[in-house]
Image 1 (cartoon, rainbow, N blue to C red):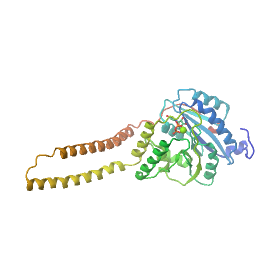
Image 2 (image 1 turned 120 degrees about the vertical axis):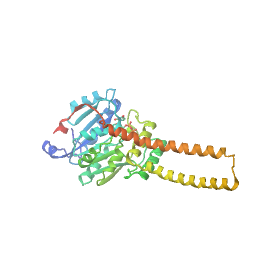
Image 3 (image 1 turned 90 degrees about the vertical axis):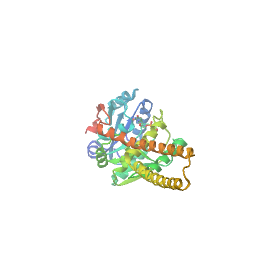
Image 4 (image 1 turned 30 degrees about the vertical axis):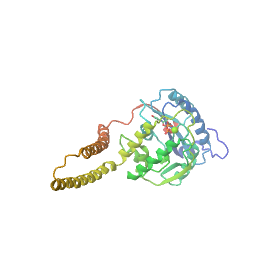
Length: 332
Ligand code: UDP
Ligand code: MG
């Protein structure tokens, strides 16, 4: 790697002793982004001022385009690129988990290949880490690259989630964060299948620092997240982190039972005092509809949990590895 002004180049022995940071990069059909990404990251890494070595672990999440070939071609040329290929597309959360399981660095930083997580921040993150922080979150200043609807829905999600969850997830912090090996070890022990990594990252605790950055738009290619998938992810995050939705129904049920009791008494007394009163079509229909609807909704929520219990008890692995190319740096 060539050095530029301001760089303290590490000699071989120093590099062997230096602590190593692994960048975990999940990729799915990203042939358009790999080149731009590597060029940018390499350029940033040569300017890193902290005494660490950095290697890159790509997790190929079942890409069907030239992604894998491009990465292997680069890996053949440089000692710092590893590639873990999954047997099919398992989704970003599983790909990232696979990366966390296979990263060998003393710290890891997951980042997206589309450069929406700007690698310039890495230097700062490493500085905080070497100063003792176990987790260094990168917080977005603004969601420049995102549409109004996306940032509004993201805001609503964080408010809802944090109102219910045992551990809040910080607003505007994505998967882009540095985590010490100790943190990674803790995360590896969490075996759940329905997974929201962001929630798990904050669940484990540890001393956390923060750096700020401006989020740029995607450098190349297109986002693979539809609103439908994001909604699914948000519900996954909620249902797999908290049982508050279940408890809400206990309260709703109690209130409705109380209301029903009061209304029954009213009806009973009225019938005794004023005799039988035949009209009542509207109130009967409303009661049936309201209670029926509420029951369905409550059942749906219970179903969400039952479904998750089912996926958990099957104990299937989160992902299947097809091949693993380990770089010299990661092996050494
Ligand atoms: N990704 C993946 N598997 C998937 C979808 C996405 O590994 O099924 C990767 C993708 O290649 C990228 C990162 O996850 O490196 C973030 O994806 P994207 O930019 O599409 O998501 P967004 O930034 O819109 O949340
Ligand atoms: Mg992106």
